[in-house]
Every structure is written in structure tokens, then in C-alpha cells.
Amino acid sequence: MSLIFSWANLRVLSATPGSGGVLRREPEDFVVEERPTYLPSGSGEHLYLHLEKRGHTTAHVARELSNQLGVKAKDLGIAGLKDRHAVTRQWISLPAKFEPRLGDFKLDGVQILETSRHTNKLGLGHLKGNRFTVRVRGAAGTAGQAAETLELLTRLGVPNYFGPQRFGLGGLNAEEGLRVLRGQSSLRDPQVRRFLSSSVQSAVFNRFVSVRLERGSFDGVLAGDMAKKRDTGGVFLVEDAQAESPRAERGEISATGTLFGRKTKPLTLSAGELENEVLAEFGLTPEVFGSRKGDRRVIRIFMEESELTAADDGYIVQFSLPKGSFATSILRELMKNEVDAAPPLDDSEAGDEEQAE
Image (cartoon, rainbow, N blue to C red; front, top):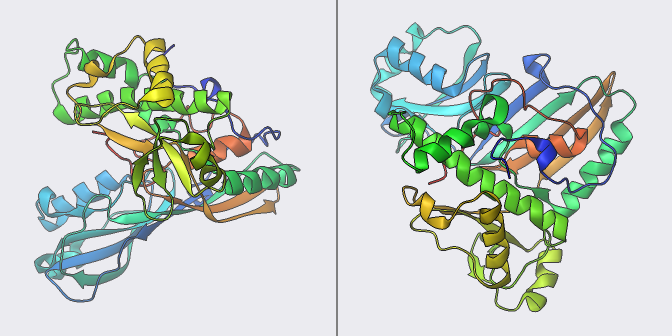
């Protein structure tokens, strides 16, 4: 099994025809609105900026704020990363003492929509998720079938694949990431090494999700699964799969996959057998991930507020997703093509790229 990312290697949930089409002809074709965990209270030692940007990554905007206002990079707070090839709105925090300098900040394509104060610095992951409004062009006459697919995904859940942004241009990141994990890479930048090695975790996870789709256990549970509760987020061991299956079918619980690392225990029983089978396809063992902390990731996600309307040459789709998930997973199901696999994206289009540890 190749570590190179391709949508063609990952199973789709929906059997409906794909609409085809293209994304991001204009920045306004891909709009991302951050859904914060909390809004600033109006008082405190931290200044919150609500920004709208076009043509810039979040990291670039943060660097410009640091350079133009004299803020130390470590004092800037960001909840999630946003892509360059979109119109995105998000919050960034900085010490309130820099507020008098805000008038000096100028960057084409970036607008400060509002400011407020809060008692703490904004932290990575301090968001519920993101709201997307995406225009698919070049797909005239397919809005009806795309709406049918969207209804199915809303009801059954969406495969929580890591999108192509995690795997780099050409989908090659995981190959270099494996060399990092095996001590065979000459790369020295620790941040780059972490990102590349996380792409190996992501490739294994994606394959685990795809196999479960192939074998009919995507919307169910197996003995040995660590299942996550949709309402509370609690995780528990599935001992009796037959007893828990009705809850899974109703979407109340979903199986999780392992992002392997030294502090995350592999699955057991039937789920563990499937997980070991996937590792063996890549010629890997859990021990190779010893430099990673590890985590668990739910294999399916549920959209909120999903809606699709016809447009002149295609359609516009809207939906909200929880943090850590990729909008490309939904768009791939609708379009049935290599969504966003070619453009060199800089940040997660889902707006909160998780660095799996």
C-alpha cells in the first residue's frame, strides 16, 4: 500500500453520481467563517481582532502583525489555521497594550471587522469548528444529484478523512515522514519533522476508515472499538458490538481510529485485528511511531446546517463542521473527483489543522 495520497485510493460513502466541477476560481468561491468556542467578554488584558482575509495564510497575517506592530510571535493567539485560497474570517488575539498601534497595520486583502477585549490569550483549538460556503463551478445541471448526496451525508455522517492539505503537493509528505520516523531523514527543522511524521499517522488513519467503508462497519462498531459519544465526546471501549450497534446506526456513537504514538493504546479484539491488517499493508508496526505522542480520531463526522442551491454553472453548498475535520471530505463525496489534490495549499481549508501527536 502506497503512502502517497490520492482520493482514488479512498472509498466513498455515497453511491450517487458525482457532479464534477472545479473549486476556487475566485477567492469568494470558498468562504470559511470560524465558529469560536467563546466570544471575547469585552474586558481584559488581551485584544481580540476579528479579521477577514483574502490571498493570505493565517501564518502570514500573524507574521505581518508581529512585524508591523512589534508583537512577539509567542504573544499572538490563533484558534485555527485558514487557507490562502479563500475568503476567511477568524479571531486573532494579542496583548491589549498594542491597541494604539493598530492604525499602523496595513495589509492588502486583510480587513479588521471588529475588536474586543478578553481575559485570556486565544489558544489553538479554541473553536467549535467552521462554517463553509462553497461554490462548485463547471457542474451545470447536477445540483439535484448533489443535493441527494448531501442529504445522505447529513443523515449517515461523512468519512472523516484527512484531506490532501495534510499530504503536500503530489501527496508525498507521508513518504518523507516515514523516513523521519525511521531516523533516515536529513531534515532538521523540528516543526517540519512533526508535520511530516503526522502525515504517516494520517495515511494509516485514512486507510482504516476506507477499509471500514469497504467492509460495512463504517456506521457501526466492532468489538474492541473505542467509540466516541456524539453528544458529550466521551470515549469508551465497545465490548458487546451487537448491543452498541443500534446507537451507532442512530449516529449517537461512532468508532475511532488510532493516530499511533507512545501514549495511545492500539485497538483490541476485532477492531484491533482490522487495525493491524492496515498497518501490515504499509509494512508498519506501532513501534515506529514511538516519537509521536498519539491520539484518537473519530472515523465519521456530522454536518450541521447543510444546504445546497443551484447556481448558473453549478451549485453553492453550505455546511458547518467540527474542528479538525476537512471540508474536502464533503466536497469529494459531492464531486467524485480529486478535490484540491493539485493546488499547493498552505493551511488546512478546514480552518483548524490538527498536528496529530
